[in-house]
Length: 152
Image 1: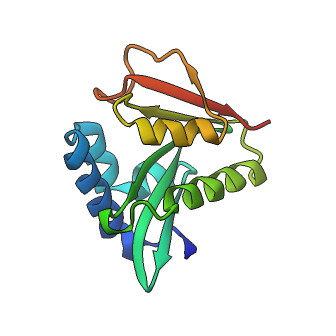
Image 2 (image 1 turned 45 degrees about the vertical axis):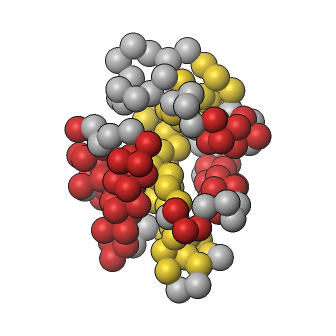
């Protein structure tokens, strides 16, 4: 497995993986359509990052770090193709994202999630994320938990 940085040629993979995941567990919200339809505008240009996992010659997973404010980023749009789940690829991605965030001097990462995603929440807790109060006007209708990891 290897981590690749954002490359426009994989933008369609990024969108497809996330749309599949959203439709599998929830539904696609307007905010998702906007971000997934133009990740350069909403993630890359403001200072965020997108990473891909390449395995056996194919893109099999992705994650984004979207800038919220100076040194604070949202870990978002993490998806693993169904055929590759259960292979610790999510761990691999989170470890890379955390290392990158620390090396970049960021102060905090946040995550919006849903309590029905028990495996994901367990994974976030394993890496030190703690539940914090969620604002009423959070960007996701499906979001019922907000977590934070202080990096510095």
